Image 1: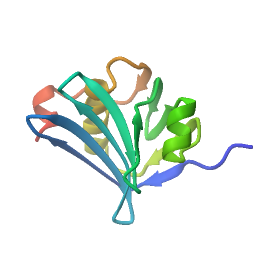
Image 2 (image 1 turned 90 degrees about the vertical axis):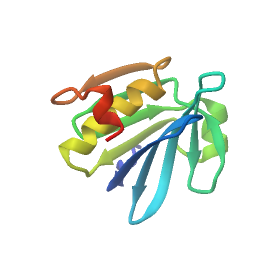
Image 3 (image 1 turned 30 degrees about the horizontal axis):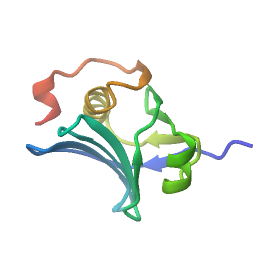
Length: 126
């Protein structure tokens, strides 16, 4: 039986010289951080408890619905389901930033994207 998607009401993108991080949260709590470490070009995911595992092998962003497909080790470490479904209850500008961040962070994963309007790399960091 499928569980309902987790509602996300906040998304922030942060970039330093060492990494690019997409922070997804709800009710003021970080739910998931999706991060690209530039040293070695490693993508990883962190849960709210601070556990870290490899990023998803595939992801889909259609409208405001984000699905992340995690491997067995990540599921065990993070406590997320294999098919982790999120509903992004954010405005269209945030969706554009999320899409741009995911395309940069998870560039080695398989993906499907269907959202309105593209965002330039400059807008990602604004």
